[in-house]
Amino acid sequence: MVADVVGYSRMMADDEDGTLSSLRAHLNIIEPVMLNGGGRIFKRTGDGLLVEFPSAVAAMSASVEIQEIMEARNLEIPESRRMQFRLGINVGDVVVDNTGDLFGDGVNIAARVETVADAGGVAVTDAVYQAVIGKVDVDFTDDGEHELKNIDRPVKLWKVGPTAPVEPSRTMPVRRSLAVVAVLPFDNMSGDEEQEYFADGITEDLLTALSYNSDLAVIARNSTFAYKGRATDIRTIARELDATHIVEGSVRRSESRVRVTAQLIDAESGYHIWAERYDRELTDIFDLQDELVSAITAKLMPTLWDRAGSLMAGRDASTFDAWDLTIRGQYLVNTFKETEILKGLRLYDKARELEPDLVAAVARSALAWFFLAWSGWRDEFINPWERGQTDARAAHQLDEDDYLALAAMALAEGVAGSWTDGLRYSRRMIDRDPYGVFGHHMLGNNLDRAGEHAEAIPPLTQAWRLGRHEPFRFDIANDLAHAHYMNGNYEPALAWGQQSLELNGEYLQVHLIMAATLAQLGRFEESQRHVAAVLDSRPNFSCARQRSRLAYSLEVDRDRMIEGLLKAGLPE
Image (cartoon, rainbow, N blue to C red):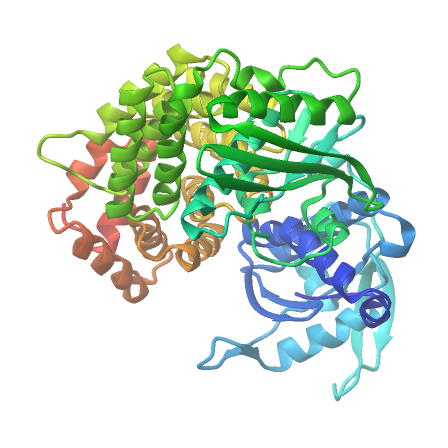
């Protein structure tokens, strides 16, 4: 399949930054459709894509879904900023060179066919039409034979016109009256790089507090932190993040005093709705957080029930050091390297010694222990699964409505085999924040482990789309690979596994799924790279031990996974 944007050169001439940011946002939504269909993206050329699919049916299905999604997205965008893709599909032989690029007559014809497609439509060769007719619910129009540039024979083409729009819920939660807020990293004005974490911590606590309001959608922390240190126009950021309002500010800390400035900006116009400066003694930092949250929500949604300040209510300001340690620990855990995670866990423990009811430290500790367990980390005296379970329940007991505590419980119940409870906690997370990456991730993960593999793919795909800048995005891709594998769809499993490897080549779980997937596809030679990675990381690995650790609802799922690992040559 070949894709490009209609009128891209004109759009770039009119607004280069806006066009590029819009294209990135659209691709973030439609590329997962290709991957879910087993597509492998071989080339990106400005506004164009070259994608290889395992079958004509897979390519056609993905193309129709992409155009439906784009039709729905364009309805929410001013006409002057709308993007429409043309898609062309051909079936033919291709050659892969030593750089991984695709060449050959099949590619050349697809590129020419794409130019014939209507804006928002799909054009296919007769070979594709014959392969998919009766298998894909699409109305084709016979477009006759075409003389295509540099093709020495007429090519018969069929067209699928622009599609009717799908419900917006297929791509993103419907906004209606909802404000979508992006909290940009507050600038550190202290002149001391050691205080950078302090400015980031102010940002994160404000972001978390805002997220407590179920009527307010807050863009994920790592999506906004991608703009840290970058001079980017507010309206460009808003388009890329699909935000309606931006919060930005600065922090200046000097000995026992802190000055925080914050401003609220209308994303579309760039107009400053509200700005304020707060000078406080460091002892009342949490009251300052409460004041900031209350002021911003009052401007955003006058009728909103003000729960945003509840995160800081009643907390003793003398526990600032515990908050400080928690933020530092989060930096280390976000590296997803075992040695750094262990350091971060020690900081969480110190924070909890200072303030035992600091739910953020307890919940983050649970999540970190679970990741270590999945990574295969083992210790003679510590069972990471048990520590994760213990901390998850402790966090939930402290605050059963805390977003991270709910995430920890969703994982804990899934690991324990209580998938019904795991799904309940996951859905509560999504109810709390439809734009929160973790909720969709946890829902998909629990559905997959419960044996509902096909049902797991939509929420996992949504998590991938929402989490463009999340450090754990590799794990979302791995879970998508796992769900496709367990559903017997090995080509999409391979495509998502490759995405995960590109983001984190050291993750044990993705090497396991890649070894099993390649073996099921009969590509045994390629699977050996991943077998070697597993054994290099865990020399004592055995399939029998792995089977005992698989938290699956269905025995047939354990059979399928172990079958693939044994085929790949991993020890029994």
